[in-house]
Each structure stands twice: as C-alpha cells, then as structure tokens.
Image (cartoon, rainbow, N blue to C red; front, side):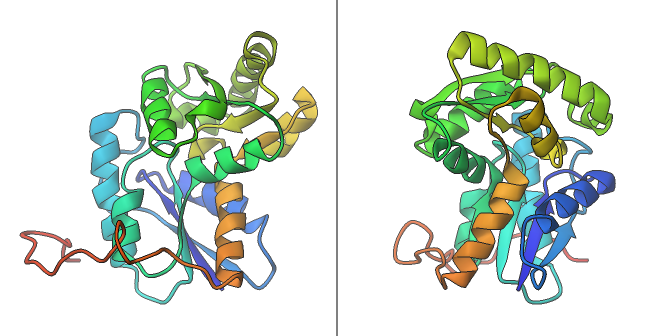
Length: 239
C-alpha cells in the first residue's frame, strides 16, 4: 500500500517530519510518500495562503508520477479537501477531521492547540463545516508561527502551557495538536500532560490505511462526483 502525505507548504523539512510521523503508525508494508507543493508559501498562516495551498496541493497530487492508494492532507484547518475528493477515486483523509474523530473516541470534549491566534477562527470554521464543533471545548493559540515549531523545545513548552489551561479552564479531556508542524510531539506531550494528545498526521495515516484495508472510498454519486469535463485555463500547471 502507498499513501501520499501531502504538506500544504513548500518547506521540505516539514514534509520530512510529516512523512516520519505517518510512517511511524502504519504497517511495515505500507509506504508513506511525502509530497511538497511546487508553489505556495513556506508556511500557511491565513486565508489567502490556505486557498493558494489548496490549489497547490491539488496540483501536486494530480501531477504525482505513480500509483497510490490514499492521500493524507497535512494542513490543519486548511481548505481544499473537498476539491481533491472530487478529483480522486482513492480515500482522501484530512488531518483536522482525523484528529478530531480520534479525540472524540477518547474523551467527551477536546481542545485544539494551534499556532498563531489568527488561525483560531479558521480552525473553528473548518470544525463547524465538518460537523465537529460541538465536541470542541476551545481552540487555543500558542502564539508561535508555523516555522517556529521546528524548535521542538520551544514548541513543547508553548503547547504544554496552553494544553494545561484547556484542561483547567475548558475542562478538555483530550488535546488535538492543530498544525502539521507539530507532528511527532504527541506521545511525549501525552505522557507529560497525563491526558490523550492526538496528532492529526498520524491519525490521518492510520485512518487512511484502514479505509484502504476495508476497501472503502469516497462516494461519487453526488457531492464528490468527478468535476464536469471542461477546459481549465492555465491549470493543471505544466511541469
């Protein structure tokens, strides 16, 4: 089985971290292939960059040279999942949905710990659109930019502080890490905090592998039917 783990930004080191986090939770015979968009921002931290990333991700996946069995989208709260679901016949799993669904199996309410404060309303809107908002106690910001998360010590300290406040003030029973740049921090933070900490890339990879094993894929009879045949000016981008 081959699963594409798709970064939403153009930072290769983050694609590497995402790939490692996904590979760590799947079977030995499942291959995780990291994919980095060829255009876009080095970090996605707002609506404009998110919509740009959506197009860049669709382009990167449709231009991928080889077969694959599923896709994991490694952008927390980012746009574009629905478009990719129309384009592909294989399962498409968004890390936001995956992490929230796993968290809901572990506690009554979860809180999301994310990066900059400006990302909070974007994540709240995506949880609402996915029908997952009722079980979310709060979305909290660490105040860190996405690329600052590459300093693991700084990231862990900031996430831990906000997670403890989420438990104390919002009575959260599980924590969701709200950025692909937090991949790989979940187990250590879970032990430190004493509550379940769910990381979306790992959750997405696990669910994507499960869907393939169950031989299930996206329904194509209505909402995610393939796009109607049209000439699209300037897209897909030519290599």
